[in-house]
Image (tube, rainbow, N blue to C red; front, top):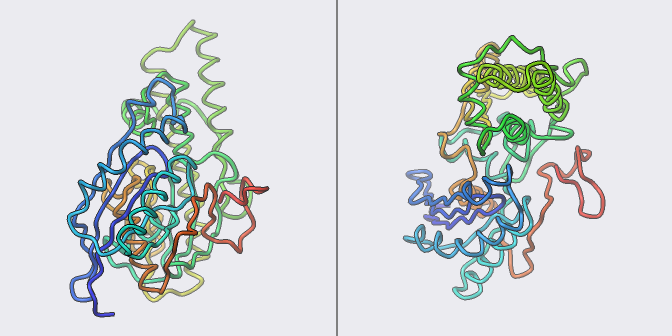
Length: 358
């Protein structure tokens, strides 16, 4: 295709309201023309986590403003259609369907996780196939990305995602939200060897992970310190954060090593390991993953930090990839709270009437 494609992306799967315009041509490749992200941290801070009803209301109030700010030029409309908090996803889908109906422009629904997984192709034009660790507040999966709509899941979390564990640990220790940056800041001043927290599932084969028990271990260590001293010192909290963060990084590094062995067995011509999602911004996690990648002669790729967290530029790019492959949607597009990337893999968590979550 020699045409130039300009896409409007809308992202509203969790607590970031975002819109972006991305342009693609075969001559110049992808270009982010605009990217607007309005966070909701202050709205949820008092609750220690994201409240779905508050998030949905904020999306409904802010989406049109974000779109107006980002829409400098767009030939197409597209939107995150799932997975995520259903209220927020529904707001984005309804706005996009209204724009498409009123302008007659095509509509392309995008899986939020595909947006993250395809980000390395937006930033660095990485060739298929590549190995992706998608590690965020709500998800943690190892994927071999074979094409815009082709993903092979090698493993993932069977309970809490790492980002969720960071947030809950921060809440346990009286730190502000979002928990990832807060825990990392404390950990930099702590002793990461003081508490011997478990490394869940490392004694079992495969690439599946578990972080719920690690969070519980932090709770028990905190309670033991409080019972002994009558409270926590500043250094206690720093050491708890450092020990927790090291445990998460160790688990991700070892599971990456296993996933990489499977991926390299495909003998890709240019092996690439990419990481995306909010937890990819954690410096210790990123350093350990870089070491594993280097040990296996695999190029390491991580998007800029502003493209690791939820944003609409990744949604616009994933829509361009799908559109170039012939994908189109219409008024029957629905918001989906659950939408696995690899539908052929057994569900990790959350099957039932609503379908597999991941």
